[in-house]
Image (tube, rainbow, N blue to C red):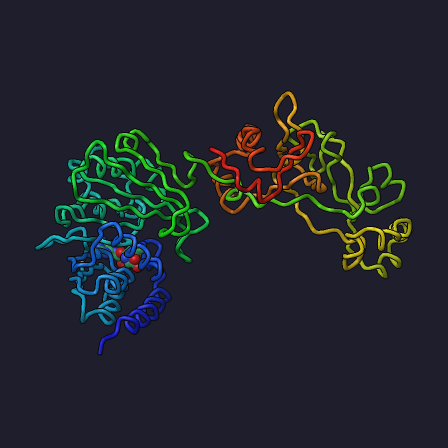
Length: 486
Ligand SMILES: C[S@@+](CC[C@H](N)C(=O)[O-])C[C@H]1O[C@@H](n2cnc3c(N)ncnc32)[C@H](O)[C@@H]1O
């Protein structure tokens, strides 16, 4: 007897075999949706539709049938049709679900349907316009340009699917698209989004965080777009949700139709319009606890006097009151040029090695040997003078301060040097999300510095702790919960 779990297992295996045998999946936009992800999208859709009755469902680019399988799981009584242009994937789908699903091996864009559907759900092919070719464009573009105001010849293939599918939906039917997040920010997406908004309704868009790309092999950030074939009223609301988990979104933003139409670029990789928490942008650590700043932090003159080799010296900021700038510049060796920095003695050699090969370091260490028992930190280290390994951060924060006349108890400092800092500073390292945004020039570190230094004191005070005498302190976890707008 046919069994869905078995069929799904088989589909996964067949899909991997076909993937491995194809060299041009990228050019053809052939990436199967992870099954649990397809299931989550179908479950969310059913919540929206508030139905479990049998529906007419179409998967217009079904591949091996990830969504087909998810629909069969949650709407077992539905009538499902699956289409794919690629005979290999389609016959895999046929093998697994052929008993329950009507499959058609054809080009969806030129397919004429005899009937319409309640639900269309898919991850369509993403193919950039320059791979579509002139023949394709002269076949489909003129009509689309007529129907959709501003439809661009630069549109990705999935945009053609989005428009065509509206003809195949019943009145009140719903189309659900897993598409690249860039749809919300590129110009060609704007024309399609506005057309769908004006002619029909977009009840919800879910945006995944950049880090959380759903496909192991296709480097795209994705969003899910729900389109309802129902004329939208002026007061229609689009809910925009964000986060890793589509079923428990971290942030929900409601936008009116007017708002949606007004916004040229719904650049929503970042929930920037509503704010993003610092913990999404940074991994935040306290600066290094040396065990004895007097002993381990020395200035350049002292290090020379003691003949400490450069390899054991790491540039480190002086105490916060001596750092007047909010941007630490550096020379070509990465040493700060505009603060009077010091050096951390950072020697990771065993005592035997130091004694044998580095006599000057050895004699200095002997002068601090008492720390081995007097300093809690030194006592608990594997080797009493080994410092934690720390990279230079992108920003420092002086995390203790008094609310003074200027009302600014804290200062963020952009670090362009290789210097680190001791634990009177917090150190902020970019998460992969922020690294990507900076790499793609969506944010500059200088603008970010301004934004950080404009965090209202009240926010910092509210996040942190207040001690007697107006002293405010903010710990890494507390800082991570502050939201900024970028
Ligand atoms: C991104 S894959 C996704 C497959 C499936 N929807 C899923 O979620 O796993 C897109 C699929 O679209 C198919 N495809 C590409 N062009 C097509 C077309 N013109 N008509 C129908 N299917 C097409 C590809 O063969 C591929 O299987």
